[in-house]
Amino acid sequence: MKYFTFFFCFFFISNAVFSQNKALTFPENAVGIYKGDIHISSDKGNQIIPMELHLKATRETNKFEYVLVYNKTPRNYSLVVKNKEKGLYEIDENNGIILPAKFANNTLFSFFEVQGNLLSSRLAFYQDRVEFEILFAVLKNKLKTGGNSKDIPEVFGYPISTVQKAVLKRKN
Image (cartoon, rainbow, N blue to C red; front, side, top):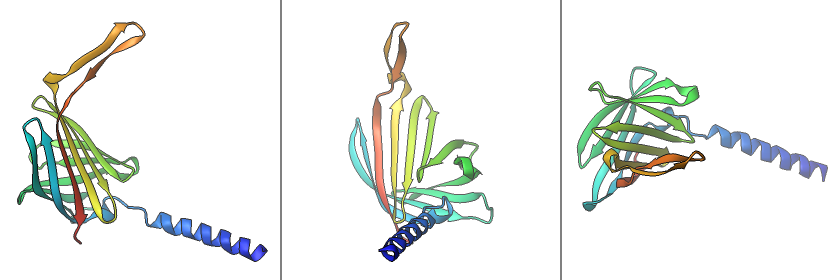
């Protein structure tokens, strides 16, 4: 019985350590080409178009090629590692626009405002795929609630007008 308990504990601990080694190291282990379709749902209707994400290493240690391809039209960006331990990154659009990004729980998040619109992006990385999502809200459509008393704060809501979602399968 002692041997059984010893081997069971050894197997359990070894398996746990081995499993931790398989955790995704971002962005190095996420390098690859991912392909699929993006589903766009907006006030104007629904549409599906082909999409790709290309994440490639460069000669610079903290810089990666980050290309989004919509309907065979590439958008060439760079993913810049600012502080890996804190999960701080930047998405450089290579035109003077640099968006802050946060990596947590195998997911790259970004939240920004452009031309009177709020956009939230989420890319969840897995061994075999990326789950991609963008939420879009128009600032001028904000709704105010609460604020009726000292105990209830004013809250602003932003109705989401467009949702873009894709599951992109790793091709290499």
